Image (spheres, helix red, strand yellow):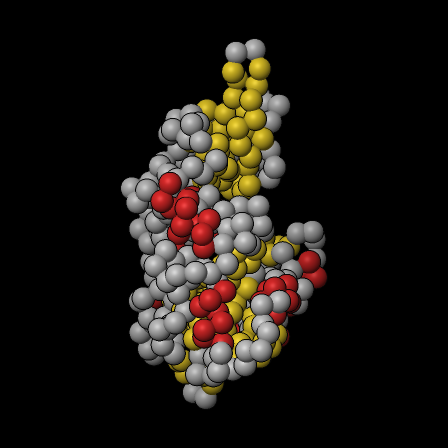
Length: 371
């Protein structure tokens, strides 16, 4: 997995990494998590997302191919438009998760860190005689993401252009009088935000400009606090190839209207008939100690304890003033207020309504207003 071009800058400005040392590339915080979280609620946050990967697809058949293979609609997208998209297994489970954007020359797919090569391999398996070229351009992709109620104003002050307001819409904006930067509207840590990509060479200058303009630098801890409170599933933590998209509340990442694609029949059947065995919920913990991913959610049934779910993410919730987890809960046990024992105990977790804050991207599915 590539390293961020911002690591030296983070180290010089008090970034804390885990395990210790910037070579790990896991930036946790700049030393004041409550202040970082508060900036996400009241001001603006900047997150280093430079380790994300990227593919470019070109060729006369690229549009038809992506529309036929992936879960979301691709045909009809204009230059500068895009979507969150999935590559599903034939059984309808999530194999890959990425952001897709139409460019002047084809399509760019932005992947979670370390996933570009695997996505290229998976897509390549479905190319036969089509005119399609796939290029790994991860080294050219160095996104910074911002969110918070003041983020839009900070972007406008930095670039002199109002940022786009529609999800997955991108525009080119000038930077430092001579450089071209891509600015994309999309969810960030479960909230409405933007991704800024000028490549590895411009990343340090962009980061400095954004933080000088008022965006507070933040790390993974604040990211998770905001994301978990918003109920936003993360690839590799809450989502993998054992999960149906509806289980992870990824309804915005697939289409029910565009016709056939890999796994479409299963997705459509779930939409029509329901029957999900589990779904992702937020559960308030009765303490603020971290809860390990994989911890089982148990309930007593007579003289036995039943395994009814699993924790996938943990964060401290400043809204609830306690620990908060995301976890998959089996059906018939998903009512708000249902209490589970965490593993062997004694800690417990209770299904709660997700805290509502301005700018949160709403989740869908069981237990929500959009269910």
